Image (cartoon, rainbow, N blue to C red; front, side):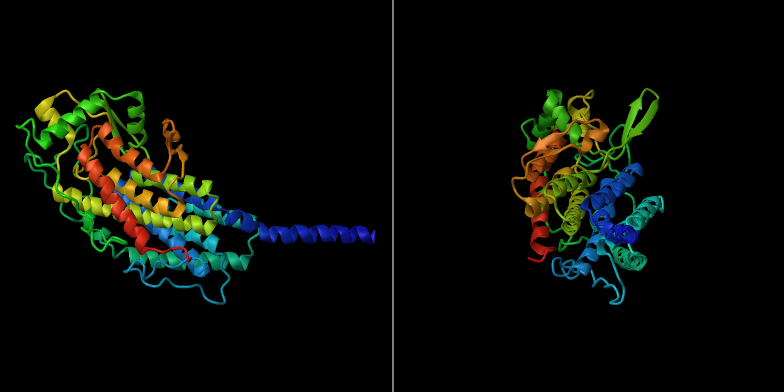
Length: 442
């Protein structure tokens, strides 16, 4: 009997030992971080966050997670403190505190994500599930508590730092004044909504020296009477493109529509449909790319953080230019001067035309992903399937960015010039992010 008893004790010991290390397989899985970003993405979608404010949700949450990872593994990851000039040194964990940095990174992401979204506590149930997952996988109690406490410390620090970005001040800033002036933006149907985030260009950027660092030439001057003028020609070009769209072009326009709140009007009834914002779409692309490259947890977090920084700065720079130019949308010009019955293929968003936000942020994100993953990374983007839109395949991130850019012309909501200029503008921002930031230690 004794050998049998020893055998049972041995099996019990092995089971207990394995259980104590199982948590690493569960918690250190980069797929769990991707799922956590996707959870925030879903909350952003459900609560109608506009594209620019959504980019703020992503950037602070991802930076919080990354700073935890960098603190736990300084041999492989460099803190963003000092690289982002206004980010102070992030507090380290106490030397006598046991921390699982991957678990703490997940919790820090959620805590910051919770604080910068609404309604308050949107991620609480998800956080509880993460904690239960760690416990069920056998994470020791001292490690669990140390990780929870360190995540809270970093999240508190990042949130305090975030309050200096001028976001709160812009909540009470003056509203955009609509002027019936030739060539100036005015609200468009069917919502006729007021100008969205007219003061976003005043938000503190991460890497840009100033919000006005990359400012392209002014767009064509309003001149509707001369049919040979660049202004008139660009309007006719958009009208003709939309009027002759192929099935493939409609697919491209729908695929990159990324309208966080589309108002549908049927007779006297109206209802809204929602999709991921442009930044959310690129968060999904980041998930697909890091998964395909089989990146580990820390590297995955670092790619998300760098991409979200490019998106954030891209929106700030683009919005500064939009409300500097106050440029009119194609729909306004075409319906007023050329064809009153004309409509764009997709819905015109409520802010000035020049330059294209999709073009800027897509190109900025593409530069970061190209730097981190490769120039000829072919992939199929299936992230829009949850909205009933078939996937599109691309040979590179830059090709995807060009597709996103030109989709706005196909949709009839941008002049081609704004998209070409925006692509160049975004590339310069993305390249600056790549140049200034070194997240992984070489």
